[in-house]
Length: 180
Image (cartoon, rainbow, N blue to C red; front, side, top):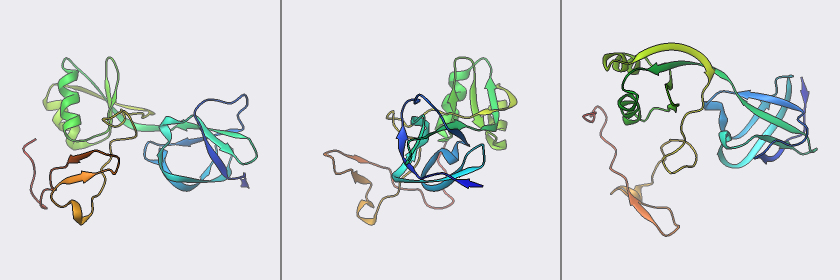
C-alpha cells in the first residue's frame, strides 16, 4: 500500500482533476481523525479540527494539491413504499432513526423491530443495496445525533454560549420507555 500526503482540508466542489476516490458508509462519513484508504489502496491521514459530517463535502484536498473524492458506499437497506408514506416517515422519525426521504419511497437501515412495525402499519418493504444518504439534522446542518450535557445542565437548560439557550427534557431512567 502506498501512502499519500495528509489531507489539508475539505472541498465543497469538484476540482478540475481527481486523483482517486474513497468509498465510505454512512457511519464512516462522520469523522475527525482517521487514516482512510482509497479504492486504489492508497492511504492518507485525515485530521480535521472537529468531528465533521462528510456528506456536506465533495472530497479531500491533499497537502500536495491532489483531490480525493468521497463516495457513499452501498449498504444493506430497507425500501419502504405504500399508501401512507407520511405516516411511516412520522413513525420512523419518532424513533430518531436516520431515514432517506424520496418522492415515492423511504430508505432506512435494516432493523427487524422497525420492519415489523412498518409492516403492521401497511407498508411494503423490500431489501435494497445502495448508498445511504438520509436527511440531515433538524436545523439543516449536520446529522441527527445526540450530545451530552455536563452536570451543570442537570435541570435541562442548555446554553450554547452564542446568546441562546434551550431546554432538553431530562433523560429517562434506565428501563423507562416513552409512550411512542
